[in-house]
Image (cartoon, rainbow, N blue to C red; front, side, top):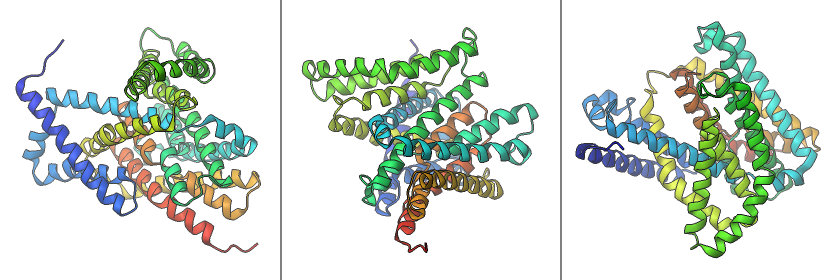
Length: 415
């Protein structure tokens, strides 16, 4: 086993401490402004990264976050684990009982909320690849598929928080929005995981693509049926025999990593395994809300800031900002999700006012879009300019979703 040198250990600990402190400080500032903490954490990373510190004091930036340093490799490992954990708690938010209760209405809203954003997100990049920086004609199909998927995925944790703030979480429309977002995220992450397998970045040489897809579908089906039943029998034993909450925390994270290891092995990114395990665990009646809260607090206050601060360390947001590209991606995102989800909600029997509000709510992208963009960037699906535009789109949609929902519901509409 390799060993970090004395200087490397010091370097790593200084990196982690600065990232955590800066992330927390800026998260608190934005919380006081009634904005998601993730915005402050990303801005903290931008200040520490090549965009600000790297341009004002390049020597300091290189000394703090040098390329190819041993401490940097370990920091990358921390960030990878953080991504897996973030998808795990996103899965915990998925309540399959709510989806079943909403029935046809949830399926209608989620279907339109998937198909229309996916179609718009696919068409423009496919027919205008050079505008998005895709020079290789052979790569435009995979890029267009990615953009369609990116436009279809929502940010369930952000949506839940917005609905709670507006006292709509337990309303009929609120439950419909949550159920539809759950279905969209579940299908969207399956599509994206398979897409990574299609480009061959995550498919090992020993595993044919067909086998990878079959195993992926089989794993998801098993975990959401038989696997849920087995976990329902395992959790009561853990709660009785092990110290609480240490037992359930340790076992749940161990299962998260094990599921991630399995899907990574079969050629699908580890985030898919952790997400599905989160869905299966969170749906169990023996995994209490208090246990979920402990897992959330542990991950959101330690690992999430490390991930979101690291976003700003990766690219120079100033040099890679393209106003035209950003505006087009924003237009595609807003149009696809609001029209798709709004139309689906209207067909489900809601008024136009409620349908438009649902469309605004489903438009929140938040952390999920950023995670999606980062993985795509690491696998060569997108360039840095598209990545920066996706991050900005995720932040703007998250910031505007709540106010637009409130405006839509408060406005008097003519019938």
